[in-house]
Image (cartoon, rainbow, N blue to C red; front, side, top):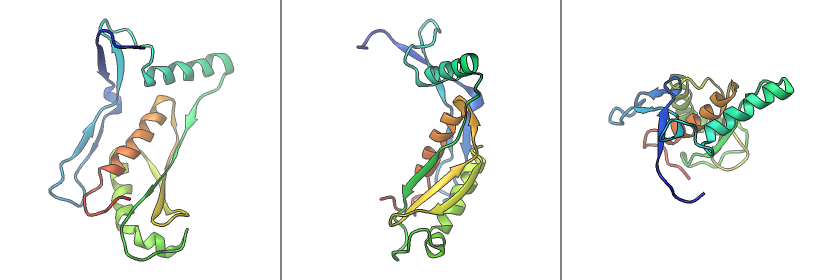
Length: 159
């Protein structure tokens, strides 16, 4: 593509996410908005990820009569706790319970609609799933889960 000219980031106000600081009273709130990359004259930029996805979703609807309703399964390692717990165990669930409670609450506040928080196969590995959403909202939701999870208060160590 090369470098030429400038682009503008046009906020999609319907995608705004706000999550208060949660259990850490000193942490700032998380507040962000997804946006579309556009040319300086307002035309969609040819390689804006949200525009590309929006165009494909519309093509599926027009050519195939299909409505894209998607959800993602997110997995991460949480380096909290000293014990090595068995995969998928109640012990592992209890070890991650404090973080899981905070995360579910934060995701709800961010409009993500979480469904499950559970231990996975690997050591300190957990999974979060959320309700499906239509089109670009599904991709925005996937980004929201990652950003909110990363924003967790500092008392949990990430590996």
